[in-house]
Image (tube, rainbow, N blue to C red; front, side, top):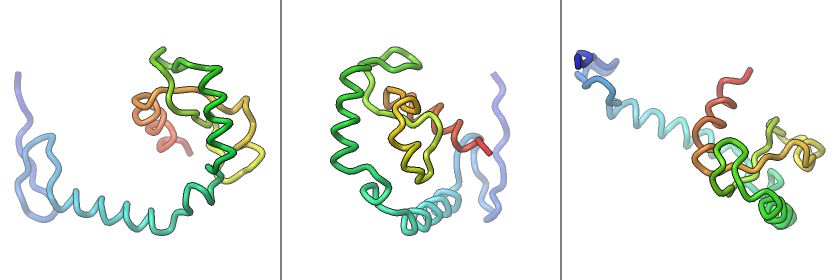
Length: 114
């Protein structure tokens, strides 16, 4: 099976196909740190003890992932609430999902959404 040729990164290093350059990894880490510094805490975003109780009750009532059928561990907001309290607490906007589904396809879909 043919492999792609190495590429030259913007910093001038030759990088193998499918591998990220050290400068790219560092740049991404710095960007993430800047974003996290400006982001409110989970508690400030509404994920407090009341949410933990409601989440546990919802997962007890919905024990399997709606996407793949694995045991659910996360209550996902179908439409991202973005601070809207009424949307945050609307149970019709909740879905029980497993961690792999939430971390993979769901996060990718949210990043692509306008």
